[in-house]
Image (cartoon, rainbow over all chains, first blue to last red; front, top):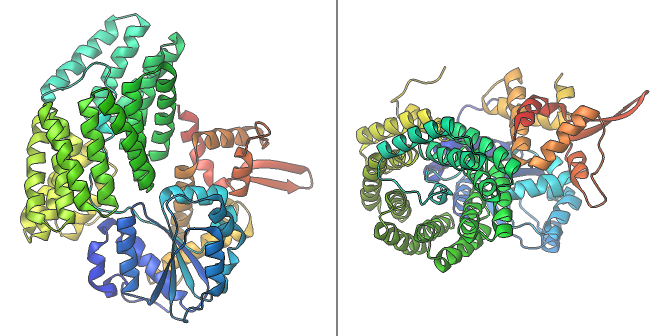
Length: 456
Length: 116
C-alpha cells in the first residue's frame, strides 16, 4: 500500500490553524492513526499550549470520528479505559491535567496495556514537561508507546520576556544601538586594563548583558561563564547570582529551556540566601517564562504573579511591566485573549511612563498577537508596525525579527502577499544572523510562498 | 549496527523500526531507507538530550567513564531513573556485568563534557 496524497491536505480548513512548521509531523500523526484504525495503538502527541492542543484535536476530528476524554485522576483513567467501548473506526483522545500527579503516572505505567485492549488507537496529549515526567516516572508507559509526535506550536514568534528582566548590574537602560555598542567597546577596554577580580566580574557581566541584548548569545554565555568562575573563586555571591541568571537567559534564547530552568533555580537560591529581592523577583519571572515554554502555563502564571508582587513591593516598574506582559502572553496561550489584553495594556502604560523603549516595543508586539488571536488582524498589523519602528531605533534585532515575522503572517492573512514576503525575508535575514531557533520556520514559509529556492 | 545503537534490547530496536517504517510509508517508499532509521534515532537522541537534567548528564558521563552505575546515596533516584528509561543500560556476558550509557547517546558525550 503506497499513499498517494497527504492526509493533511484531505483534512480541510482546520489545518489552517496549525503552525506551518508542524504540518509534516501532523501528517505523520494522521498517517499513524489511519493505519492503526480498528487496532489498539498508543500514540503520544506533545504540545505546549492548551489553546494549540485544541486546534490539533479539531484537526484530528475532521479526519476521524473521535471521543475526547479529559481525565484528572489515575483511577478515573483506569476505569475509563476499562469501560469505554469505542466503535471500530473511532480514535480515543486523552487529555491529562497540567501537572501529572503520582497516581496518574502510576496508572499510565502500570495499566498501559489497557490502551491497547480498547481495540482502537489512543492519542494521548502531553506537554513537554509532562513528557519529561513520563520518561522518568512512567518509563514502561513511555517504552510501550507507538509513535510520538512533538509539535512546535503556535506561530506567534513572540517570546515570554526573559530578556525584559535581564539582570542588569547597573541600572541599565539604553536609547539606541550606538549607545550599546559604545558601552561594549568601553567594557572590552576596561577588561584588558583592570586587574581587580571583583571589578572583572562586574565588567564581564555587563559585557555579557550587552552581547545578549545584541542577540550574540554564544558570546554572552562565554562572558558569563568567565564571570561565574571568577565570582566563585573570590566568593562574590552577587556576581555568581547574576552570571547564573544571565546564563539562564542566554540558554532560554537559544531554546534550551531545561538548562535555562536549572540556571534560574540556582540564581534564585542565591538571591534568597543573600536577601536580594530585586533579582530574586527577576529569576521568578524568568522561571515563569521558561515553564510557560514547556507548557506548564498554570505554574508559569504562579511564578509571574509572585514576581509581579515582588516587583510592586520594591517599586521595580520595569519588572512590573515585564510580568504583566508575561501574564498577558500566558493568557493568550490559554486562549483567553481578552484577559491578555487587560494585562498587556497595563504593562504598556508602565513601559511608556518609565521611558523603557524595549518593553514598550515588546508589549506592542504582544498586543498585536492578542488582537490577531481575536481575529482583528488590521489592529494587529498596526501594533506590529509600531513595535517594528521601536526595535529598529534601539537595535533590538531579536524582537525586530519577531515583529517582521508576525507582520508577514498578518499581512498574508489580509491578502497582501507581496508585502508579507518582504517582511518574512527581512525576518529571515535577521534570524539567520542571530541564530534564532525559529530561522528554519521562517525559511520554510518563504519556500512555501515560492519566494526562496527549495533546499537541496 | 542499528540494533546495537538502540541499546541492543530487542524492544528498542522494534521501536526504532516502527518509527522509521511509519516515515517511509508516509513518503510512499517501498522499503525503509537508512535515512529513515537515522532520523528515528536522531529524534530519540534529541528527545533524551532535551529531557535529561544536568545531574542526569553528569551521572551518564560518570557511567560512560567507569562502566558502573551506583546511586549517590540512599535517597538518590538518579541512577534508577537512567536505568529504567534505558538511557543507561546494564549488560552481561560470560565475563560478568557492566554498565554503559545507551549507545544512542554516545554522540552527545563530547558536548556534555564541555558543558559548564
